[in-house]
Image (cartoon, rainbow, N blue to C red; front, side, top):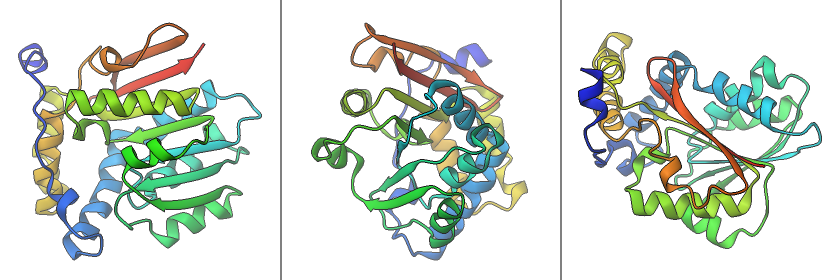
Length: 235
């Protein structure tokens, strides 16, 4: 069953959360649901470990594209793998949904967070700054291959380390999405979870869209039952 689902073509569909206003009650509940989903998937721990592993001790700048309310980066910063490390962190999202509590929590850890309301494509195109790391969580699967290839090319120009956690296109992922009602997740989260699994990735699919392999060390594969990890580090 796993092989048959993995062999199907990715299917990118609209997710309800993307079309809801940031302050819509269903959108706010869905973002709270996502914090619980992320905790179950363990994505923050995965990203924190990859940052600790891949960044030099003097690395100081980091950006997250598709940062949402900032809760994911807050969880990354709190992980023991990054204990004692601080960053100037830019949280980019097209919706003005960064929660003050999350931004303040980052600042309390000694980070220097800045929330930027911008489309990730436009921000990467006009922002010439380089970052020691760029991260993404449950973001890349929103895009068709051509758009994703363009996004990855822009990211590669801006960083020496890119880490992304995405849905894994698998039977386990589909089963996990079907169980979300038992966690009390709302209709937006339940719909978008099923859509996300169909748009998720299997081995090699993101790497195939990375702009170049020469000069980069690339890893891609399953992390846990539900997550798919992609890491590109400049050699």
